[in-house]
Image 1 (cartoon, rainbow, N blue to C red):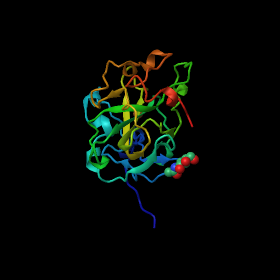
Image 2: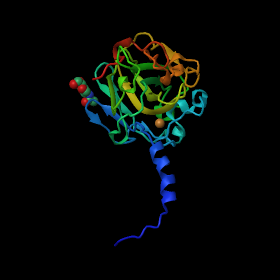
Image 3: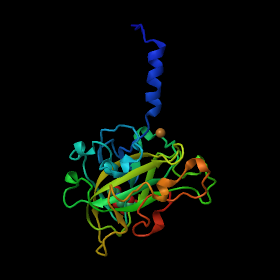
Image 4: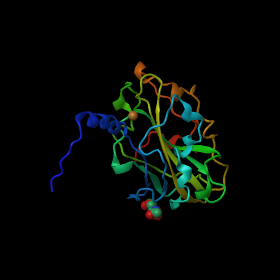
Length: 248
Ligand SMILES: *[C@@H]1O[C@H](CO)[C@@H](O)[C@H](O)[C@H]1NC(C)=O
Ligand SMILES: [Cu+2]
């Protein structure tokens, strides 16, 4: 049966900007070669595919942790069992959408005091994975290593203590005019099995608190033809920089 559509052209035109404003999220946790189901191990949120910035207000909001409304979904995901120093872990975007905005991908982890399904992410966060630009970088969007990728994976370092963690992925899109940004973040639930008994992971930050508009990474002016891209905080990765700009 044919349906007659009477949508005026004007109405159609107003729909288009909404579509083009839709971006991506990271609902699939990856464990070794398995891309798990949407939200199976990843905490959903109420911000859909939308970016966050609001003139920098996101930097001082709890939404910086796992995105707007993620607390409404804390108890939904399962907790992925992973082994430090053994398993390859990471995230895939929705529908394997390729990241089409330039900007770094950062993965942080934060130890839950108990069950990660009850954890709000208010503790310390350390940085385990980072993907920036080619080196040297010509300042172009194509020079970002994140560009056109849909999967971000790394080997979980062996120096991560046993326990349940939030694992947070963030892409900070830098294409906006001048120093404005777009943040996309999402958190997975993982239970780390580990033999490690050394010092606790450092350098750590709080979210919010650890990011500021003055940070070199956020001050990056994408319209000024930069030749160097400072990375989001903290400055040092844990336990070393081996997972910096490393694509498996
Ligand atoms: C992931 O791969 C490693 C290396 O092959 C293997 O030792 C480990 O058991 C695998 N983990 C899972 C959960 O399959
Ligand atoms: Cu955008």
